[in-house]
Length: 281
Length: 319
Image: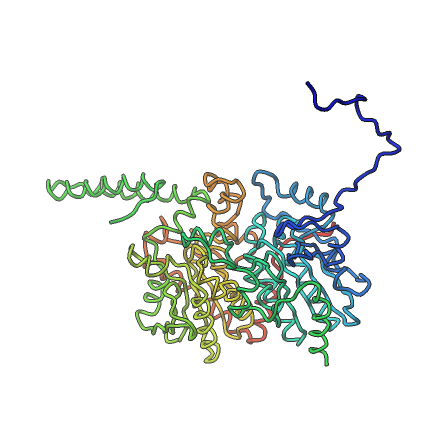
């Protein structure tokens, strides 16, 4: 015996009456699982209003958060890494690059742009994690190098927002040398007495940590970001023990003396303004 | 006891034959000099042939050969024992995986620095397998600054499977320590020569690798990752290390072709482990010749050229 019986067969709502639920109307926090309307989440600078979890965001989002009226001039936008080693693993590197460029509409794992932060000039070089894990290859190195040249030429401060798994394996020793290249270039910026602020965001590891990310006049970070040289899995395998709670977080790195301060993304612009003005006046 | 790598087995067999023949000759008092000579010639030919056709992975194996000379052996030989080891980073401790000190070569003081691997099981542990902690890199930098202050050239010997990925290394800022070295080495106003004598693994190698001249011994490797780890990450299995070694273009000749190093130092026939004295002499010659060349430049010019060299590395194009 049926408890419920469908009286009319099939879907009865006409197409005209159908109510669409747009994709991505809600944001579910991966940390506390709280549900927030997307527009509220965006307004909150992609931070969970309940637990302050900072969602990973890309260069477009950072530029809109930092630059006045989202106005900026991007430089070397079309620069891409070459494939000097003709590298191929399970896929050819050139194919991987092409597919990633198509998918992300980015040309490499970093974008460099000049804009104003509450009226203060700033060059921001911001990494994009969704471009092959934010990995650093020739493209990233060259764009940073050129951004530094631009800063020296125009006498404007530099901020690099790091978000990267490290050097890009598919460019092997060429990526390794980008660590040397960016660090060497930073000595010239320093000589010109131009401030360099390094903002470390989740995650910043490997060759990026071991080069420009740790070389700021100020090293600052977003809360709760993973920051380290070796990845936590590798460290765990090395010591054969579970890692202590909070290991390699921004708070841990601050406590050990490698960061100047941790800044909530909501206060990033105001604190950045304050910092830039301190250098200026 | 000589260690033979898998592909060196034919050499081992011939050498055993030679030993046997020598013993027989001695016992029987028969003149076997002709066949002994032939055997020796054959050993040389076989070695030459094997070593002329090494695959990248086989070169990685040679770079890790347990009989290869390590940093301290080079320093001892080059200075004839006339050197003073200096310890400590003045902050945390003395890292045993990174050694250094002033040494005298042909009447000239040079600051030698390098990663040190252990020569037996106990020493390997003592030296942490040549994997420095942050204090190792800071010790290296302290010694470099000391050399700069007293206007002494710097020679670094690179031989490491990587910077140590331990818990305390992270606490004490492994990333910052390496980054600081890259930055500071770029602008040292004394000549800096870096020589990869074994393994040049990633940031751990580069951390003492910013020089006016960067050389690789013929049978060494230098890359962003070891072939084993590369295989495990990109192929998700440890079985593709040969393929990874190939793809990474990590050999000395590949690195020179890509203009990522300044030169390749030839090794004795059958690798550096086959004839220590010969490789010491060759390395000494390269160091002295390079110093003569670098002495001709002003410090400003040297620093400028060094920075420009590293800044020109990388291949990009406009899309």
